[in-house]
Length: 157
Image (tube, rainbow, N blue to C red):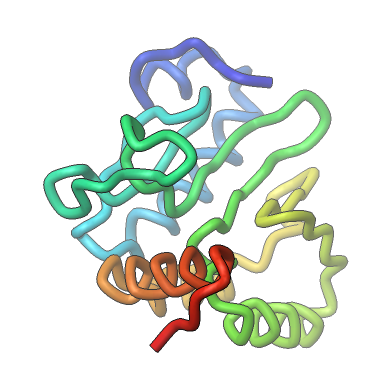
């Protein structure tokens, strides 16, 4: 469910209190561990964290007018979503994340770059923090460009 909110504050304000508290708790973890080169704002109708055009002028290959998306957080109709796009530019990082998640004992509901959870207790905040902290904007851009080259049939260096 995409929001039409123009700011993160407006997005949070439109959520019912219980859902706002969950999103705010996850947002706090994201902000505390995010490389300062990323910017927080609204993107695709949800809270987004992205590489701004000033740092990566090419933007997102699917829509170069958009800054390069890294992570998104959303309160969907029946669950919450944490889109870990930045993680999915590195297959080894996905495997490492999945293995670490299994050790938490929590159920993993992971789709294409989307970690779904129904309540805050379903989410391993320490693992989310560690994962975000381990991906700098510079490393993310390098992984992203390599993934694009691989997708286009070229070999990454």
